Structures are given as structure tokens and as C-alpha cells.
Image (cartoon, rainbow, N blue to C red):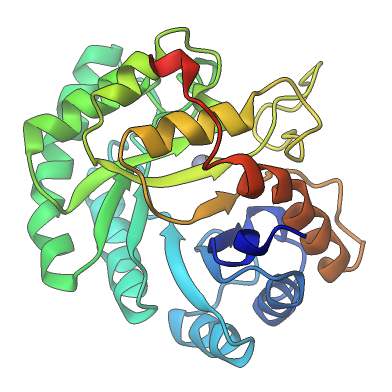
Length: 281
Ligand code: ZN
């Protein structure tokens, strides 16, 4: 075992554990050696931030992030805004570093949707600052444009964040959403400390379930060590998060799934520092 793999904190996303209770999820993460959690407010088990907070503390862990409020742009904008504020309240109560925010699907045109999302995000910034919780804007894979996110490249996400110019907004960079982009390294090079989170999962061949058919790191085609290396090169110094959205482990013991996920990134943790970000050169 490489000694420094234990000094690099890791985060486990609840997205793999939607079929179990918050207590089971937190306990499984702790047993597997994760340090912190990304809590899903859309998990069927989510009752309240206080219940999740108790489960997290019982397991001896902390909450690193919360995912998510409403989409930034929705047909019922007031309900979406209320959901985002409630999510910020929950994230603050849980002591989270950031709340993941997602733009929502294209309405009329991608450009119009992104312009509206930028205004909504700007209005949320004082609320985020008040609560001491940053907003982590997550660009999605382009195949989600009609269903979940008009924001589909790191470049577009960075330009939105740069225009807002606040330490309370940054980017959640997810390997599953971004890996395909040949300009990725060049875009990361302009990120300038604005990457708040790195989410890791793999792209299976074939991928037949887009939202919940992700692969465990190492199972698919993504150069995840390279992805982490260019994120580190761009100034990201936070913990790596394993976010494998899939239902295939439902019915299996949560602690064995968590162990599998933790061991899937051991090699990335061990080699990440030494990996040469050749793509960024
Ligand atoms: Zn993600």
C-alpha cells in the first residue's frame, strides 16, 4: 500500500446509494475509508438536513457537498428558486463546502437558456455568500441538453463563472460529462482555481442508460488519472469524489459497494501526483 493514498481525502456520492438509508450510506462510506459525503437531496431516503447530519456524524464523517436544488432555469421559476434556497439552507446546516447547481434543459434555445441561467446564478450569489456555501456549476454531457442541462462544455461553464467573478461560484468538473471534449485540457488550463469539485466515474461501451449507466472507475474508456492530473494542473486541490450513478448495486450490501468504489480509485490516488499532464502541455 502506498502511504500517501491515505492522506488524500476522498468523497463518496450518495448517487450510487439511492436504495439505502442515509445511515447505511454514511456507515458504508466510513467503513470503506471515505472521508466525506456528497448528499443527494433527491434521494428517496432524504428527509431533512438534520437527519442526514446525524447519520453523517454517527459515521464519523463530514458532508463535503450537497446535490442539488432546483434547476437554475425551469418553467416554474419561483419554485426552482425556492428549491435552490432550501438546498443552500440544507448545505449550510450540513457544513458543506458547496452546493452543486445544474442549469436545466434547453428552453427555446441553448443561448437563451444559458443567458437566463447566468442571471439566476447571479441572483443566488449573495444567498450563497450569506450562508458560506459556494455554488458549483456542473456542465453536463451534450446528450443531456434536452433533459437536464443546456450547459454542456467546460468552456461555457467557465465563461459563465468568469463573468460572475465571485469566489462563491465555481465549477464541478465531472469526468463522465466532460471526457469526450478534445479541448478539455486547454479549457482546464484557463480554469485558474475555479474548479471546486472533481467527480469521477467511467464511460462504459456501450452506454445504454445515460443518466444511471455509469461505470466504476477503471471499467470504461476514460483516462481518469489524466483527467485528475489536468484538474490538479489547473489548481484543483480538493478531494476527489467518486460519483457512479447506477442502479446495478441495488440489493447488494452498501459497504461492499463502497469498498469496491474506494478501491477503484486507489491507483488514481497513488499515481495522480506523478501523472504528467501531457495533454495540458
Ligand atoms: Zn457529477
